[in-house]
Image 1 (cartoon, helix red, strand yellow):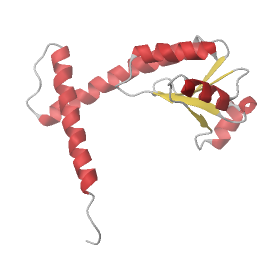
Image 2 (tube, one colour):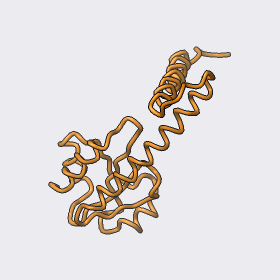
Image 3 (spheres, one colour):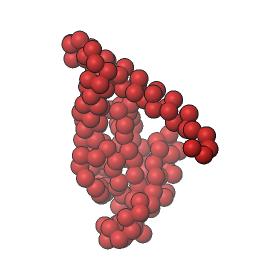
Length: 151
C-alpha cells in the first residue's frame, strides 16, 4: 500500500467507540439498570439514548423558534437541524446577531438551490440554520429563543 496509514483516524474511531460505551453505561445507570456486559450492547444503548434525547431537543427547538413572531421554519420536524427565517430580517444579519450572543448559526441555500429559492424567495433563497447534538441542553435552546426575540 502506498502512503501512510490514517493512524489519527483509527485512534479517533477507537475514541468514539469508547465514548459511546461510556454513554451506554451512563444511560443504563440513569434508567436504574446494569450496564450490558457486551461492548456492542453498550454502544447500542448509547445510540438509543442519544436518539431519544435529540428528538426531545429537536421538538423543543422547533417549538422555541415557532413562538418567535414572524418565524418561518423549513425542513423535517424530526431532524435536529432547523432552518428558519424571521420576517423582516435578512438571514445574514440574523446569523451575525446570533453569533454575537454566542450562538453558532449558518446561512445559505445548503446546496438545495431550487428548493430554497422556492421556499425562501423573499430572503434571497437563504435561511438561517442551527443544529443540535446530544450534548446540547434545553437551557441553550432557551438562550436561542431570547436572542431571536431581541433580534
